[in-house]
Image (cartoon, rainbow, N blue to C red; front, side, top):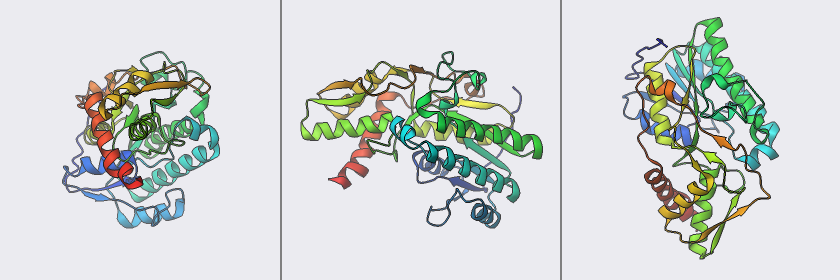
Length: 319
């Protein structure tokens, strides 16, 4: 892999699509150190699912670079109960932003995929070449199909138009600005919220979906943002990149770590009537690490940071 390239963000106009979400907000924080002009568009101002308005906005604002972090996201329940929304909205956002970026002459775009694009029983740890080698995990296949399409769009636009569109696939994330809705949120945010509520209520147990055995890899969103900026500045080519830590824990171990940082001494109550999801999901991030990037935030201090943010910015306002 020799597609190294220097793309200096200093002085550039950089559009973060999806800046109100967990990943987008982390990108805005990280880009503050790059001496660039950060462009954002509130949903009330720009609906990213609508091709015409997106093209008009990009033509007017003329960004040099785009981080495509906008997406309809959620946990197992949200994916299972709203498949049409997850498929349509993600396809629409990706199509509008990528096509609009090409038409507007954007110099570089980074698309945020997901490791859920890999087959349910992909060899572990999952390498980038596992894509499309087997059936997807049924509980999130709608989201996965949309993200696969986004990844292939990057390749198609590069092949046909020669544009510098690249992609990465983050592992499971946690951190500030996550969605802490117990029904629609991902596992990390849901467990943080459950633990805090149980702590305040003095409940002796907290419910955890499944039996706690699935193996998962978790990464602080600030590490992902740093990896995205690294790729934007240093890579051009057709390769897509896993972004992860290469370390895994069981859901039960993860939940117990949340209990520890929150100061909650109760126990976990596993609800085996609920689905586990894929039995194991661990990325092989060696392709990215070979370029020189490494994660910096370990799980326990990272979760302590996420828990503090939740208490200060979500729980305190709901009280």
